[in-house]
Length: 337
Ligand code: ATP
Ligand code: MG
Image (cartoon, rainbow, N blue to C red; front, side):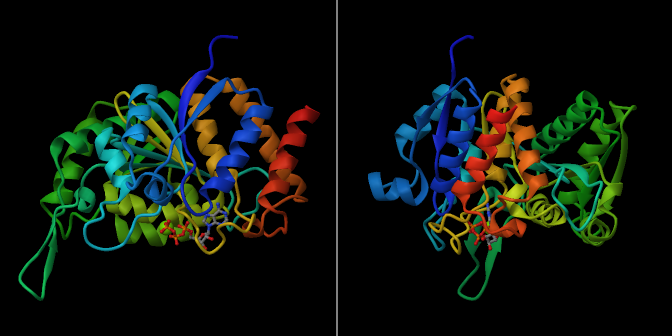
């Protein structure tokens, strides 16, 4: 075996430390060749160093180019930039990739859901260009550029081609936002023309929402600007068993940060009841990203076994197991193999 890969680990806030601990234990038990460099951010960073995004953390990600991140709390109110948004912009993580699938053994409202969301991650209403317009109004700018739209479209089509997906659906509201969403669509069409083997269509975001909750199996890859992508990600998570089981990756040209779709879940933080699967599956995406396919598959099989047996599920999945108990059950399955 070669040298372990160094990965920055940000445990995060809320349920972050609990699920990070779980993920570390499971990856260690599976013999994943990873050396974690634990760094602080969010509330934990603020408390320890006075800043929510310490220099050391940024330096570690810059060096390792790979990170696994727990959810982070962002202070609401003026003067606080979202740390998640800052990280994405600092490392130009333009592609947010979220595979949403029915997991074997886990009953959802639907079967056959197998879609991948490609969410543009750097602009749109998340560019943070906001100002007050006098005393009684405020403005946020929805910034859409050709460059960012082309590269997220290219990422979606390249992925489709590489992984044998049949169709890319662009999500928009260009009937209302003719210029901004119109440009996004224009770019998607240009890229689509370069991939004749992959089907391409377009859907208006409100119509998509209705269709997703009626017949989600008709969709394959969804390509969306930032805000719509954010909203449909949570919706799609709900189709397959909830936020506790949906992983994600933020990918740039030379750096990638993996994280679950869910947030800090303050309502259940510190209670040993968070579902570790979403963060674990994010870690498996990381393993696959660095070519550790076999280790990822072994852990995936252990998760499937636990989901199928249903004796160690956390409350969000209808069980009454603790985070620790579910973690131990997964590790036991790893040893059984
Ligand atoms: P944030 O502001 O950090 O996004 P939030 O209040 O939006 O926090 P989320 O973390 O997005 O909360 O979670 C929304 C709901 O889903 C909460 O009720 C939470 O308990 C539940 N949830 C999210 N993640 C998990 C998980 N891993 N395990 C169990 N329940 C979860
Ligand atoms: Mg949330």
